[in-house]
Amino acid sequence: MGIKLDWEIEAEQTHIKTAGEDPETRRRRRQARRRLLLLVIGLVAVFGAIAGLIYLRLEQREYEIEELLRNTVDAEVAALRLGDWQAFALAQRSASGDWVQQQEQMFQSYQVLKQERDVELTGRVLNLVVDRQRARVAVEEIIDNVPYTRVWFYWRYDDGWRHVPPDYTFWGDVQRYDGTHADVRYRSVDAPLAAVLGPKLNEWLATGCAAVGCPSVPTVMVDILPDESLTLSWSETNPWLLQVPSPYLRRARADQPFDLELQFGVAGLLAERLVTLATNNLQPVYPADVYHLRAAVVSWLVGRFVQMNTNSFLVASLAQHYGEAAVGRLLQAMQSDSSVQVLSAVTGVESLAQANLDWRDYLTWRLATESELIRRRDETNYLALYDTRDTRARELAYQRFGATPLNLQKVIVSAPVEMSEDGVPQIRAVAQIGEDAASREEILFRLADGVWKRAS
Image 1: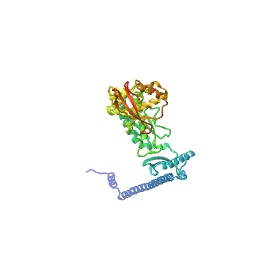
Image 2 (image 1 turned 90 degrees about the vertical axis):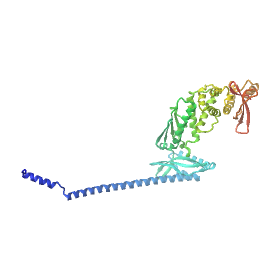
Image 3 (image 1 turned 180 degrees about the vertical axis):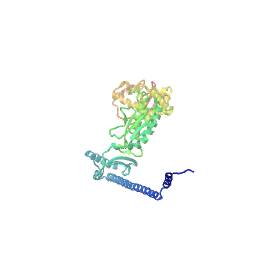
Image 4 (image 1 turned 90 degrees about the horizontal axis):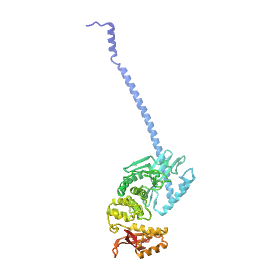
């Protein structure tokens, strides 16, 4: 056993005394921590309650602001419904007097519309967006059982909301549809249109190029723009940028934002551009048959897109009996001065009489061209429309050329192919004259020099 010195014994005793914390001190420390935690929780709860109250107040305020706006719209639509111009005018405001005049004209147009059509001004708010002092409201109206949307703009003055001129900077956030062949840029208001236009255009590009034989399927960019001065057209700086004015600049179909009028417009521009691409920008020479054939392909393609009959009977029958690829072969075979005989090479028949095609629109065009050439005094091209080998047909041609053509459109409604007694293919066509369905005329066409020429 070793000997411990006094200072070592004192050190051990001090260590033993300080090795364990005093219980009272530990208790006080726990209480301090608990009080601090409760204080923090209390402060958080207080601030949370304050924030919640502020949020609820803001929500309540926003609700009140929106309700005031809805009440303003209700009152405005009620004034339209009742024909109360004074009440309607109270809802209008602008720094310019032109706005009130425009709205008065609109008010009067509604009164006329109510007399002529079945109009239901429901005033139902389809969409409402408030951005501080300004607001945008989409309002429903029903005309002849068809729902429409009108987009109106408002400004919150000290005395309440007022209908103000359109604010096209407040058309919503920029969005984009990216398709395989079509990309669409638009703002929030035009989302319903873009949702239909993008996929439809994508489909049209694929089917259209397959039919006309494009070298490759192009990519089309579309801009839907809230611009009143804009017309549906291709951009002057980008040949594949289609500019579409927003339909919500005016009354727009709520159930069909991509309505038939807009469909035909877009389909026409696209069909024209695809045919130009497939023919390497072929420029037909008037009055060669190719002038009609190219236009007929465009018309058929438009009908193919919108799924409606565009009376392009010749090209439709070509596609029906020889496949849609035959339309592409026709475009490839056409020259700037081609006659209708080019169809013999496309169909593989020796005579057009054997091609089993519907000639109604082609013969209608020939009759219209005949009248136009008389007005132009173009005797050479005029006589080329007739079978001048026949003495009677030649005499009739000169008589008509010397007379003033009537401004009555002749539309071929029947064009059966038959054989004459001397074995020459002919068409005994029936033409409707003008708007009277009962006014009809029989016109004889014969196959001469490989094309159909008038013989009566």
